[in-house]
Image 1: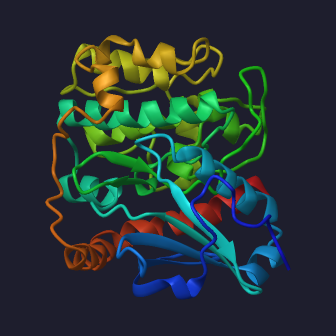
Image 2: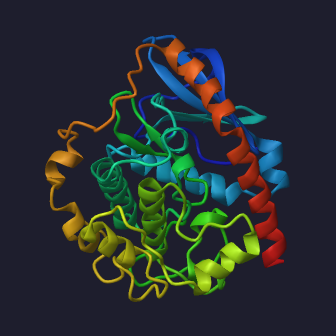
Length: 334
């Protein structure tokens, strides 16, 4: 069964599985796996996401997969969004051939170092804000911003990936209401199952910035019901150690009322003009002319394969905890 149209005309040519040499499995998920592969014609490396059609159909996820592909096609033009180079299918599988980003997950680096310096957190937050702003300019709400979905490339720039929860067609006046996301990063309006808009992404950005500075999401608790209550009702606590402008930005992004949240009026323009980002030249940032504060020092593909397995061992307990949290979320909403 064909789940989407033949290969998009903007991409270079229609590929097939035999065009690639598979080197390693670098990820697994509900619908399939992600492979490290080399294109035989030019010896370039790619991440190939292979999805099982029967699982997609059984879970009725066709629309989400199509949305992910559409977002991937649009993201090729932005430096901090993973790009799609080829997409094709066989009778049983779908293939997305994407940028191979080899500096490791931001989640891994954050777990290893516990927290980042404020300049480092500002750099990552600025690049993420630029990516989110670009998606919003195409009427796309991302809805699942978290450190696990942010990769570092070989130079240390961020690359936002995993567009499975994106919602298309959300212009500045539109809302959506689907309950989705990761528990620690859910905005209050999502938990309340109220209509929400693009400001949900600015809440998530604030949560990620808070975690980068302080080591944990702002309303985190091992007790899931307590964490949800914190998100809904507990005032934001900003401990010492951060600058006044960082605290002000956090207060703006983590405003529980989405209509008063930073970004509610002018979206990305409002966020980028905050004083916290005054050291950032946004044109230089977009063109990757700012040297990243951390270099993953990736030398070869072999280094990356070793790092992937080390990363799995390092954060296994955290992934398991979040899987359990997602199950709890489903039960909570039901």
